[in-house]
Picture 1 (cartoon, rainbow, N blue to C red):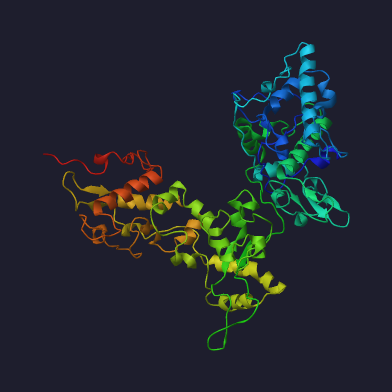
Picture 2: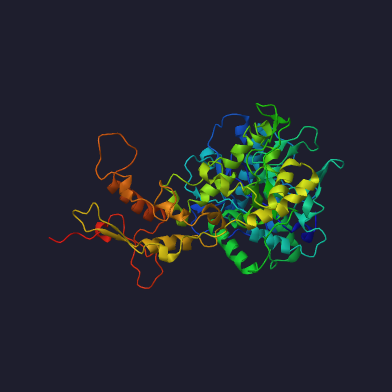
Length: 587
């Protein structure tokens, strides 16, 4: 077994532990499991249903409470001689197999059934004979195969965020190869995995090789690559246990129980500990040789393109996209947010026409598909759902996917940069790749990074809406405060700054269909006061006012709340509070 210092270290870039179902998934160790609070809501509920791979089950799966069993075994004096070995076998390196009483050789259905029945019932009987509380000891199937369990799962997936990664990496700060403590690569010559020799050689996230269900690579030895669940539990928990065993009962180590990683209360405790242990000025960036800036360009056509006149034409069409890679890293917890299949460029899998290795998703869609969280547009669309953005973007037609916004990302170089960028677009060699970061940084330097609007004195302080006044007095809109509040809510957001590239962009949240202007038309210029006979997609003026104003209050979550930080500010009227916006007329 590797020693404790070798086994403890930086967890993988984006480790997401998937699923608590299937056979036994998380080992115990180092003593009894922690109490979980509500005993009916548990993170250690496992389903013993391995026989389903051989055909339909004749009995309901056994609902197995892993931490509860660990706690019971921990009370036995002999338990500490075997610990997890009571139920789990290990390989020669000390890494445990997760299947109950099974190694790396498959068993047939009868052998699996016999193993469970003989060992589980036998253990229950032995504990009962010793005067201890035990599980079912009879041969009635329903004692274990209960189709209506009285427990429910509160299991949560565990994400190793940057702070947790930092904490693990800190334990290996003095090691010659701290990344290799956890990260490994496959050595073709040796026919086995070896520690990643340098940070640049780290293959990235666990999920790139260890998929949800596991994979097989023909001709590779071994051909089978463990699933993410098996790899994470086998490596992480084994490491935690070895650290605890080498340092005594008081040594700080990671969880070894189901709830320790997947229980909501324990996850909250992990996050709180990270806040205490990670310095506020710590550099959390995971360095894998990535650039700070990149210049993204369309893929060059395999054959020269020729126009109708027979003359060659440029094959890239759109201007390049200068990309602040370092800034985007700071806004995500994992590289998998964008590089979801491998640490390569999008074009490596997503070709212009679409390719099998990219799921036949063409490059344009990979970058712009709003429904895909990994795409640029999809990620931006998620950001627009934040309360400070949703007030405008929840109802307006402009935003992500609006072709008028192409220039927010695709920058046309001006002046001295024009020739350099043109050369970069034409060349496809290593020297051209080396040009990209510098050009991208210069192009981004000229872009707006903060949302701004027209001068305060140019913003009307109030706007009176009175053209429909009948049963109520005109509504006096605190226009200037609304505009300034929207701008303040986007302070420090480079994404908003890039897309709100003009001083009047923020105005279009309300003046949504008119051209950007310091003097937009009145709402009544487009929305009729009364509904006419002709079919039109435009709501009447009253409906437009209510949809726009109340919809914004609801989307931003400020309805009935004090949104203005000024002293004595009043709550934003609720949607049901008519007189909150326009007082009733006096008879």
